Structures are given as structure tokens and as C-alpha cells.
Image (cartoon, rainbow, N blue to C red; front, side):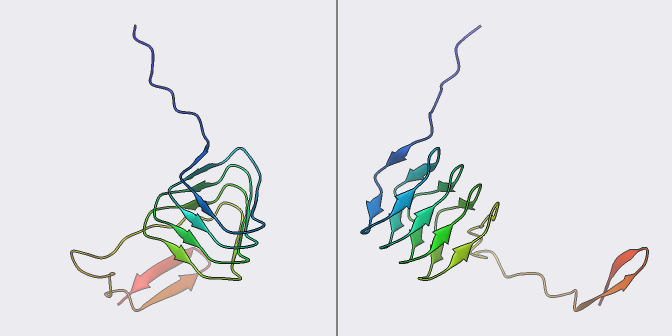
Amino acid sequence: MTAPEVHQSGIRDVDFGARVKVVEPCNLYGCRLGDDCFVGPFTEIQKGAVIGARSRVQSHAFICELVTIGGDCFIGHGVMFINDTFAAGGPARRIRRRECRPGGCLAAS
């Protein structure tokens, strides 16, 4: 049996603004955090992501590549971002509304 390749969470290649607070453990790499930001524990912010000044990223959040968050934003506990650029098309536009009844919601076009 072979040993696994183990990577520990950590902080590397991060451009920090002034007075940034980070609660470990978290995984921050190749991102930029503006002045007075807060990053909670168990958070991952990937390379190329930008967090604007005075924004707060609460615990268990995931911010992936290509995501930019403006200043004075609040990212709640467990929020996940995606970086779908719709390179091969756009979002689905067929479902215009949903009909909701006690048994659940049905898509209606």
C-alpha cells in the first residue's frame, strides 16, 4: 500500500490589505483581500479571487477562481460560488415560472 499525497490547509501567495483578520484553519492561495476584510474558519478562497475592502467572509464559505466580490459585502456561512462563464452558451431560459402546490413545485414553461 502506498502513502497518500497529503496537503495541509494554509495561506500562501495572498495579497493582504491593511487590518485583515483571518481565523484558521482556512485555505487561502493566490487571492487578494482588501483592507479591513474578515475571513472566518474553514473557508477556501482560490487563486485569482478578489475580496473587496471591508467585506466579511463567514465560516465554511468557498470562493473559487474568477470570482470578484465588491467592497462592504457579507458572505454568509456555507456560501459557495461557482465560476461558470457560460463559454458554451448561456443559462437555461426555458423555465419561465414555477407552479407551487402543497405537493411540491413543478416547472411550467
